[in-house]
Length: 138
Image 1 (cartoon, rainbow, N blue to C red):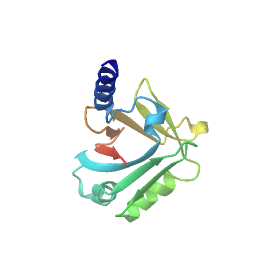
Image 2 (image 1 turned 120 degrees about the vertical axis):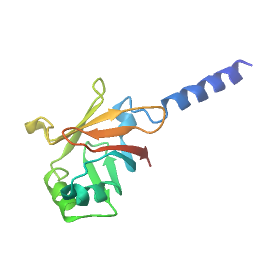
Image 3 (image 1 turned 180 degrees about the horizontal axis):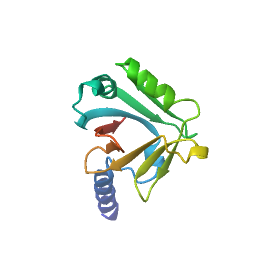
């Protein structure tokens, strides 16, 4: 009887924590954009938005980060060269729920992503932009 209670409790805890990123280990892996929640409406952002809508973030255990898309645009490729290059590393601040991208010399300041968790999939908001997206772990 105690085993059944334990299994029910373990299942409930798993459901509650689904979609939450509490530790660095939770973040490691590939994350696909599932939905754009907020985005800029200006025409000049359209090419980057089209690429982000079809993108996947890969947070590697060695701290490298990669972003890919099935809808690459010239502006997206430029951003990849500038931000997601070979020097780029990621750092996760568990208490602030922030992903910092960059290099150590520059304080991981190239891009900052605020994670907002709910009972579904996590929401990534790219600081200093209007870009907010719901992601799912692959």
